[in-house]
Image (cartoon, rainbow over all chains, first blue to last red; front, side, top):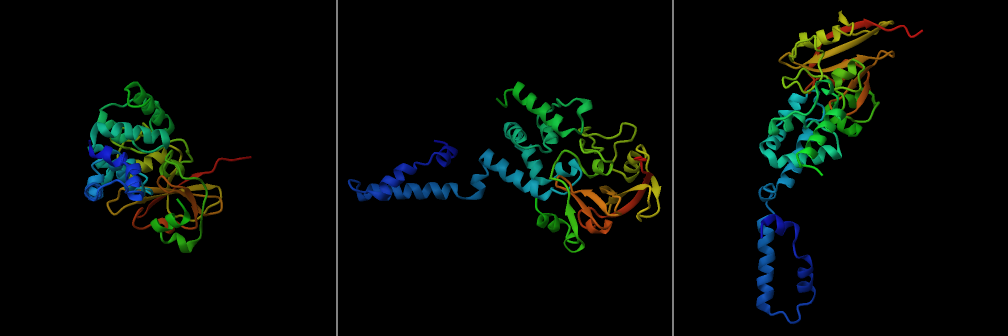
Length: 148
Length: 149
């Protein structure tokens, strides 16, 4: 089982059963199970490990980028922020995450999308019109199968 | 973002009195807002992603920004004092001379600024938002107000 599956599908019910009612469960199996739980937590808790998950990594970088570039008036400077560059560095994995974020809330993701995909579905007359640029990219995302 | 957040970025605001006059939006920036455009993000970016007047070179230089406003009828002027019948714009630059911000004067003599992707604010003086993020004022431009009668 991959670690992200362990993270998102932890057997909470099993834990409850063992913790609340250990009748019929040998001491040895309880110890093994406690160690198993503990090892998963030790494996998953470090932030470096969590950041290996693309969703968590994207959301962490996005939050940092949004706060630290909020008052900048230049989209180029906004895009030069290290967190934004790291999102670009995630490559194609980041495309559906960016497009989903754009569907939820408008933002300056155009530089990242153009850099990762090499495409630009925005028409010349739409340049600077954030709503229209966002719609163009979402349409592109659907055509390419990144969004449903 | 709240007033406290704006004051974190621009500490002078907390003592000078200002008001937030719009919701936060990424749809336009301060350069557009100074030109009274609330539908477009103005920027001479090299990737040609954003709007910039086609007659003006796409460069992050003070000259390029002045030319963009000159197309709208603004001319260079000597001071930021309020003068009846005129509208003024101030362009800020950082230590390298690169434009960072623009503010527009209101009829009251105060100034209006769009803070990045945050809100528009009305502030008393140009110095209220100068400093670490926007640097200092480089030039003032003016143009006659349109006769509303």
